[in-house]
Image 1: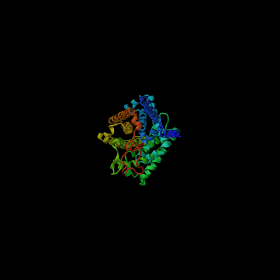
Image 2 (image 1 turned 120 degrees about the vertical axis):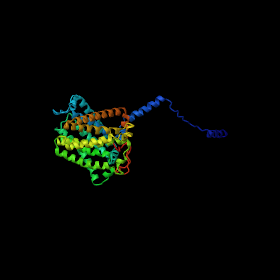
Image 3 (image 1 turned 90 degrees about the vertical axis):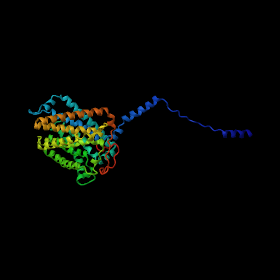
Length: 403
């Protein structure tokens, strides 16, 4: 009995402890391999791209499609009295133009597909973009790009049924957005024009002018005049409002990094002059007045380089805002030189042609060397004081001012 009690005491005092020691991994190769696999998985996933993608990325396609239209216009057979500069472009092979058009088509189709996926998978972000007083303006950008690409197409004639069908496909959303934006301006809704107007608001009127130009190519004169009058009426309202720069307006809250969007001041009258040229069939006095207005605005901007100094310190997607306005200004100068056929007009045409092509090539090079910035670009937002009607604060993926 005594032995048994001693055994029980010994057992009660015995404790078995199992200690598991986790030895840290010191294999650098294993850690590097794991990190590489994580990076690869993240890079293959479309989710980060779709979250950051916004309609402002279509400013790249605006430039490419505008360049395609410029080269097609210059390659068209000129009349017998055409100046030598336009005849020079006839020497360029058709293959080069077809390649440029194909690159623009591929880029636009890829961005459009990604944005459709964004609409399906991240609808809330698209809604925030639509409700933002600035982000909504660049919803016109993909539609404008498709219309420019349609006009520059070497394979679809304006008289064909395909041209007509595609025109309606791209113009109907433009009209819907017009009703949304212009209707709110007219009824003093959520987006009061005196407060919400900013340089990107001109994208809406540019959409109307491009649609009018495409309609005029099909011979739909009445439809073209309708779209042109709609765009011109609201352009006059915008131009006066932006010129006044009312206190508390969105124009006064524009970040320095996004000041390249001021070049949209050049684009609107230039596209309007091209649209009226297509409607009237000649670069008459109305088209010339709009062209001269764009020249004045261009001179006003380039004479103040310090305005863009901060924006040029680091590459940004906003740099693409320079290309499209210069391209349409070069187009307008080409039509003006064709009509006037004078020495000064030819010099202006040559200067703007060279400038637009060089800027486009430079932006392509900068983008290629900074592709990581392009994929991860997130535009800064202006202050929402007074200008964020109905939109609230957007997440970092939504643009504030996207050119």
